[in-house]
Image 1 (cartoon, rainbow, N blue to C red):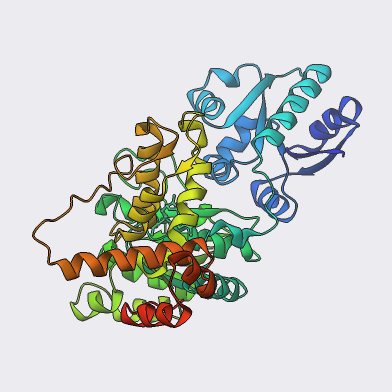
Image 2: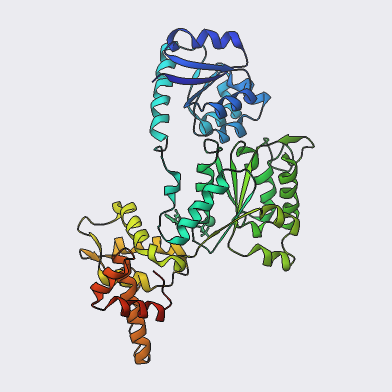
Length: 437
Ligand SMILES: Nc1ncnc2c1ncn2[C@@H]1O[C@H](COP(=O)(O)OP(=O)(O)OP(=O)(O)O)[C@@H](O)[C@H]1O
Ligand SMILES: [Mg+2]
């Protein structure tokens, strides 16, 4: 495979001198400005980038925003001898560059540095995934429906509103939509409106020009701009202050943004996926969320089911995380005890998948024996002596049914055999407990 290099050089002659000769074994694309560079990166994706005369680029454009946006590329800078003494150049090196050279450039050394950057880029590249829907683990009907929904909305470009309880997998769902969409190679940029101070959200989202406010020493691209070509995931959108709801709506309608302190509109191509753990319709009724924005976002609603609505996936997920966090466990620990499985199935999971992850990780650390116990999971339910005998019996029946169905892969006949009851009794019990295999 030939190595590919993107060279950004304001001066052609300079670029030509460097990129022939020692770099003959690279496929090099030379561009003169950041706009062309962004287009080239979007179309092809280059593992390594070379910034020639980096200081003049720094003067003429928002190099900082550009490099933030293209973090997956490994950047090498070339400076004139005294440039590196300037604070802005030093910041550039520290924040964004893997290495730098000063002119006159030693071509052999430069080739070596670029080769090193190329190796580094390959190491950092995420392993290719052939089936991105595989991100969402689970075979429950509710998950099968969710995956089908994800695949459908991934094909179009309208905004999506993901609703689900806390920890149910909203962000993972948004990532799956992005990964299966035509935008997959461009960035997925998450922003959590609940986690940013309200007075900072505007500048985080829309960016600012130099001098827009005290302390704005340099212009900076906002998160919307940095998602250009890709997807912006606006988490906890109900926490977005009213004035910013209006700005976001304008962006959705006009596809342009205006940085703070600027009157110039910039065209940005971004798909918005919003998420909320509160029913936005209620926020609209309460007057804290703009109705027009709600309707704009709710074109494609996606609901992530709570974990208790897909109990048959609990054990599969627990085993998935047991493997995923395998480094954190002692090699002696091989799996879950049947009592642990029963406890997993019986728990109501108010914190959903996130709670499950936390409990499994806790168990990996706490377990002494070969198998995880309910205590390791923090799920030991003390026997309530005052509970009526019928309650205890019903609860035990439910547990046994769930566990056997889980183990038999929802095969009713096999589960009935394991429980030592007839198929008819099995169906009667399932009906009694409202469980539909
Ligand atoms: N179906 C699933 N398969 C595998 N991992 C999952 C699944 N659902 C959720 N997760 C994992 O559970 C964790 C919580 O999911 P995520 O962050 O997407 O939830 P959320 O709804 O955005 O949560 P919060 O409301 O806390 O922000 C993540 O680590 C995610 O990778
Ligand atoms: Mg989230």
